[in-house]
Length: 628
Image (cartoon, rainbow, N blue to C red; front, side):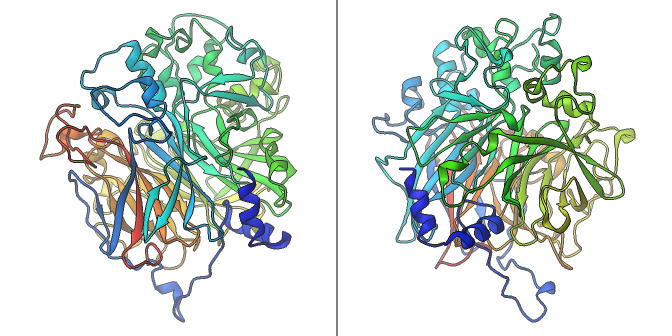
């Protein structure tokens, strides 16, 4: 099945075209289209859709002239034999065959030569909301196993028939990767290291499952990067115990107070004090081959261990792979990985180990607009025995500690990362940091108690992504321009509905236009007063930093994804945890949201169904490019 990618690519490209296309687009298949504007395109918006309004409601809203149709929901069948979804009679075995909960990042992998009418979706499942999942919110072994089966990722085949997207039944590509039953291989510097070995895996080379699967990316060789983000929330650890992993557990916030799932009460490996090394086996970037349902996902330890979120990949001018990654935590860092070996556009499998050998660096920002990438290499910059490191595996396992030592810049929760296929610049969404104090502000993190976030632009010199020094610029400081305390920096062309707070997932379409999703969490009533959604944002010219609202999620939800087809005429979005966040601040509801009494029953609006996370397919009525 993996040969399909080579056939699709070969049908369209010769060797030089392949390298040019993938270097320019930084995606599996796609191309760059020049903007066909007027004689003065710099003063005309690249987006022509009619903007929607801020607001909060039980359902979603989308720009006029567009449709957002539910493609797949939590509990829908992914694999043959999946039971019909019944929220009152769930089982771990059934959930292993069904679409998981809280769908997040989406990767689109084409199966046709146009890269726009048929393909695979690799969809992450981040975490669970037991209070909205189960009729009775009880901590039982069965419920814990259902939750473990509900995270990971789903791979489905989709096709567009008569203008509408649908899931292809009985697809040979369909797959569930879960936190409970899927063996995951380990590769790179930490594979087989003593700190990754357990009784269940004495070799330290195979982990059962992947969890907290949030952001990610798509590689030029047609695989998906599945980020393991807030893995610490799955582990219980007593802070008063001293052991060989004490520093590690503290730095990664594994504690007896931050445990969200309480899985450790039924499954010993989630108790970090009883199985010291288990937590070291999570927090990695996982590479998945959607084209081969029999392949083993791989945790790539050369990419470092932290709360992975965004992943943006480029092929540099010298042929090496450059991967930008974010650590989604307050005062955490932005990372860059450069492969030792070069990308081969004609032999797909030659690229399968590119992410195992290379150099991981961390960003250090200066107030003068410069940026330096500092390598995280054993023996350099204080990363040595005197500071608790004895080999490169230790550096990867404790990447945060290594980044601390070399003086990386602590950021306001780095999340989504995307590379503009036209300018070649890197855009990073920093969602917020309510814990930053005035004395800890700097030019790139300018605001104390920042509940609004910002978006920065990293500029590689002459487009060289392997350079040690970049420059950086602020695209926008988010928040309401009408609130002085927010100190927002939107273009004056931004309307009263075009600004937003807490930027999270982001993406460029194949025309080089920027799209930003938001995640305000339960405090949306303070940061904006509107539900999360999707905004189009200008990145260049006089309209730079102009926002325009395109899509709004139901109350309590967060918007993630997003993924475009190559013709930019279809857009896939994830609506995550509808009815969950801040429901009591929704005036029409005003109380805690539960399974029996949810703030919304989106998308079914069936009194027998709870709210269900779902993926929607967005198209333009009558056809045409998303956003105009």
